[in-house]
Amino acid sequence: MRNWELTLELALLAHKGKVVGIDPSAEMFAKAEEKTLSVANISLLNIPAQTMDFKEEFDLVFSNSAFQWIKEQEDVVEMAYNALRPGGRAQFNFRLRISAGS
Image 1 (cartoon, rainbow, N blue to C red):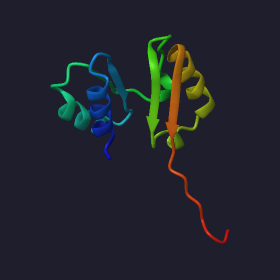
Image 2: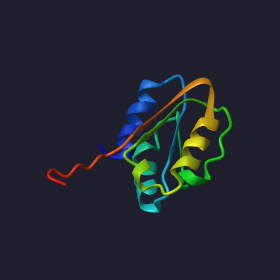
Image 3: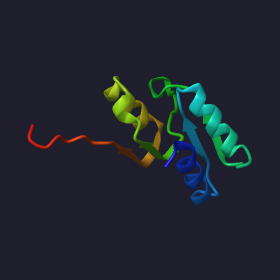
Image 4: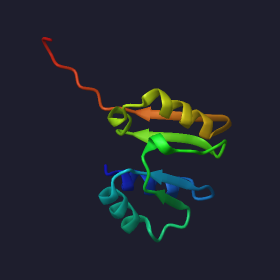
């Protein structure tokens, strides 16, 4: 699933809420913007996760297969925590590589 597809799916599920998608890649951002332009409750930001500056704005912070590419993981976890409203939740999905016989 492409990131914009997941963002679109989340926006449709949260039709009374708002979904903010971020991506540091200009190419990925442009594709997401093109595919989600008509969806009113999606906002997209072309920024790296390391520059997030949200304060108690979200009930859920969700990252799908991106966190493993971030060097400053502890900083980003703290930023994600700061972005949550009281009682909010965060979920980070990772790809995991396991080599047999290592």
